[in-house]
Length: 227
Image (tube, rainbow, N blue to C red; front, side, top):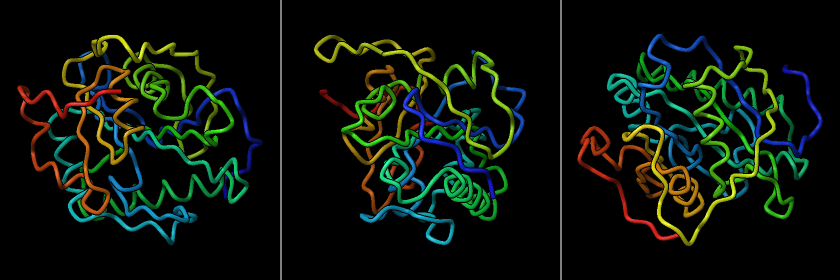
């Protein structure tokens, strides 16, 4: 069991389960993926343990395809059950470890390179909860800029800066033109928009497989979104 850590309001928790591939760096696009309703089945009562992780059909093949296309894959997920006291970071590690195991069981190249988790509730007023783009910016730092994170399932807390998003202005430019965000909620689209990524919204019952191979089309600018 991963040791429990006290709730920290500084920012999200990061897990980099395995050494990053050689392609990690400024030239690799990043696929930012929400978790529940995109990769695995979501629940109104939350996914509260590894025994409740159920992959959505086609999710492993989609993540394998992203890897084959040269993408780095980064999960960015809001998990307020942690702040609500329903479970803690040891459980988070077990959930993500099981998620990766199930993905690899279905597709050998369905690798997730980083998991970023906001543990806070909306009312906590943190800087990292989506639709803030802070987790995406931190994922960019970890996967492209070599921000130091110990490899393994132990969640590591990172402080983040206030992203100061201008929700009334133009959509920012992304660090890489092929960066994308996939989610099933407006908050996911908002985070991706504020980062400048291409946006792909999916139905929660279908998840990643709903997109087919849209993201491999470099001319596909994604779904329209107004903050």
